[in-house]
Length: 283
Image (cartoon, rainbow, N blue to C red; front, side):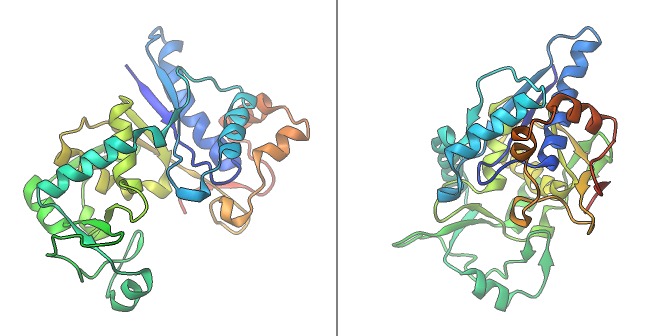
């Protein structure tokens, strides 16, 4: 059974890049039905654990945008916030296993002390590594990457486009798995939720390719099932940058409210007919 998902964060309106990603996940699941296998399933998960930035009206608008594009999903949309207890339990397990440690360092302190850069920015220099007691006040919990990779040994993962990829999570350094304001960081929460949802093919953009190294490691540490990944190209603007909410990329809602035909737009995206000056790339 093929199970895919589209997992937007409700911190702003969806744009054409989101539409492209949602269509890729939807069509990957529905392809089985077209060949006689009606067991393909497409799920929608609202990743709403980003504090005050997550807003209900953006979640509602995202679902309306998907319907406008002609996409349907197989269960009621899942709210990631309903799984916080599971994220906390997994983090507690990693604490008991001695694989995470508390960290109070600020971003400014890390930037000043870091000597290398990874996919997420400055690599944490290990200032708090070796500490065990959290003490008073909020702390982040970081993965002891050296110990984690020692315990799992070599790992690999399968991408439908890139083929077999050797996992190199050490390029991230000691990533945060528990935030100061939430028990699960993106890396931990998305790995746990994909397992809980029974996702068999993780479809997402090339901008998240490197993150898969960490997710594969977490699957091994927590005994989770290992899906296949499909990292597709990104929609890029005239400057060669990926579309993003923070850059004010035009929203799907603007097109929808202007009366554009969403199903026709989806069909053009499937065919690679891109609006305006957009191109496909990997940036």
